[in-house]
Length: 113
Figure: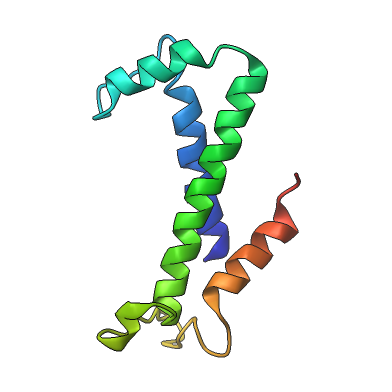
């Protein structure tokens, strides 16, 4: 599961960077003008790297927040419990772990700074 979440994060970070390229196909984006505006501002490798790092942090934060929500660590838990069940074993993936902590731990193990 954590590998899939990391792959999703990496895909969208890469997509954000690719959408800044001059020949980017932005037909599916609702932010075509915004990408073009940002692309005109971010012209050096250092600026693009900074943008990549910020996108990575934001997307990682969103995934972490979703895991907190699934773990029952926010106000939603007062009204609704969410669980993730393994289709093959019919077991909860949350048993005896905190998904949000495990996700960050996984990233620390597989990603290099």
